[in-house]
Length: 314
Ligand code: NAP
Image 1: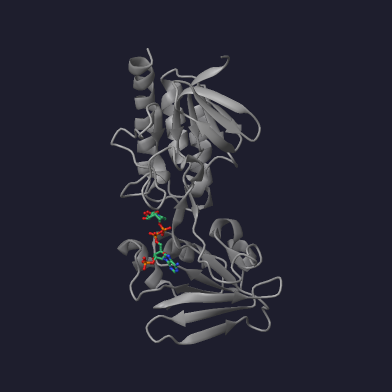
Image 2 (image 1 turned 180 degrees about the horizontal axis):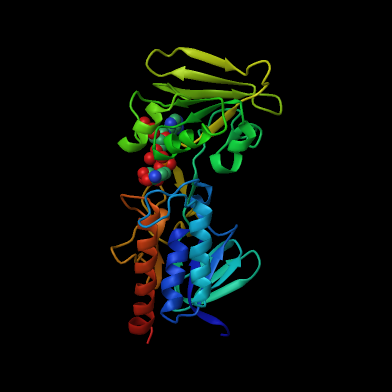
């Protein structure tokens, strides 16, 4: 078989790029496959304040550009393709993509996770027309308008703070009366005069004819329904959804062991149930999903892939 690589990494976020860096530096022939542009979720983050050593105004894209550069400096290659099928039973793993078929002795799955929709009527139809999952990408469209941020975790509260740079008023809508976000992030939000809260509430429906015009909330304690209509002069407002993530692991179902929510099960060495297949980053079962833990996973997976090739394939 021609062109059998040492390792193929599926996904070009912090986990995949760290794996790429470590694998290429260990002189393994390394290909990183990414369906879009490199970066994963972190490219939609305006500030990465908790990655050790990150500079004061380090944005997600800046951090990712540097990671990608490092991978390339050590000889990893990067291709854009979407993997649709995998055959990982034998010693040579075969990955079918939309553009080509790839072969490698080992695989690192670093496919990450995608934003979870709320699932309210009107949400899907109004994506890009007022409904967004990325404040960095779309915040600017809401300059001097109102926005609602749905969710109470780190993402929701951090992105709500970011959106105050653009929006006239930001309202966080949370289904409980206490935020899940880290206390330090909460404190910043509580101090920000542009941020308001609607507690114990969920989105029942989003309405609009080609653009968001109103949103219906249900108070989960009183069952009260409230419809918020766009200010007449504005005509619209934004709804930013940050209610968690869904692992991007569909194509591995039935092949790689997962938990009931689709996160890949690994051991401490990032090994999955299939020899030669490793998983790293947000797509795997773990207690902390951060850039630093994704990067650590990637490094471990790459070194373990190297050991697997040396010891088990020799
Ligand atoms: P998350 O921690 O899972 O929080 C999701 C939030 O959405 C929770 O507040 C949850 O409510 C709410 N929610 C879930 N389903 C909902 C629904 N159907 N309707 C309404 N609300 C719903 O997700 P995340 O904030 O995206 O964070 C994901 C991971 O990345 C976390 O581990 C987080 O720590 C990490 N992260 C870290 C940073 C940072 O350190 N700076 C920044 C961003 C993300 P409940 O609270 O009631 O469950």
